[in-house]
Length: 279
Image (tube, rainbow, N blue to C red; front, side, top):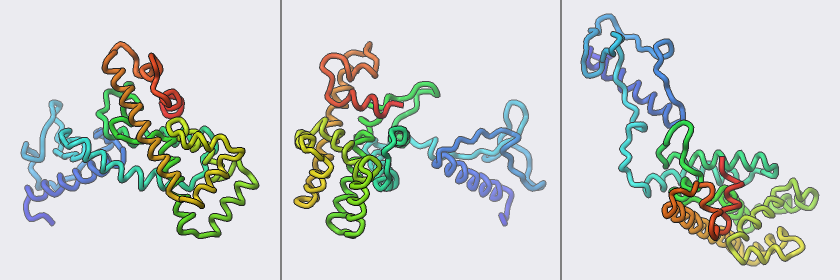
């Protein structure tokens, strides 16, 4: 129990601020409508303007609360915000999805949209109807495309399976692929090879085999780290292409963002990216 009225108001304001900040962190937006949000105070609390109580132009009383996320300083270095967000996205979203089977195009597209929405937290929202272009979001985040992000997560997962087992899981993955290649987890590596081969010549050599997936699995027997390295190279090349796109847009403001990657010597791979992640 608060010993004084001022202490009571301070505690209520602090508790409400914590709830508001938590709601913002979860992506919720509170409207503060009078029929939805209210604070019940004791009759002994004076209804007069103070540090915590304020009256609006219509004569209604309200309590001051603080949303520490919404009111956070935009001067926080982008590199720091990017590092913190990457640790969450990679560990909690990308790598947790490494074991999923996303063979249906609709599922892959939806995953890519959610992936981009997470990274949009780095960019200031322009308006409800206008958002920062997907390319710019990934450029500021220094993040791989959705396809390359999934390819990297799967490459690391498979590396661990080959290096640490269990052998039973490795056998089941192979058996599923032999029975239903188009519906299996290993079958997704075919799309990963296509995504990486846009940027890395070594991945293009896999395309020459009758079974690129089989050839890729055999490469894990020789060097489990080879394929993850190729995916990282592709991600780095993808970032260079995004910078080329941004430079073109900056040099020619009259070019729409959607065409900056296709006009005048397009950066390789941006055409694929435009089809796969723009929402």
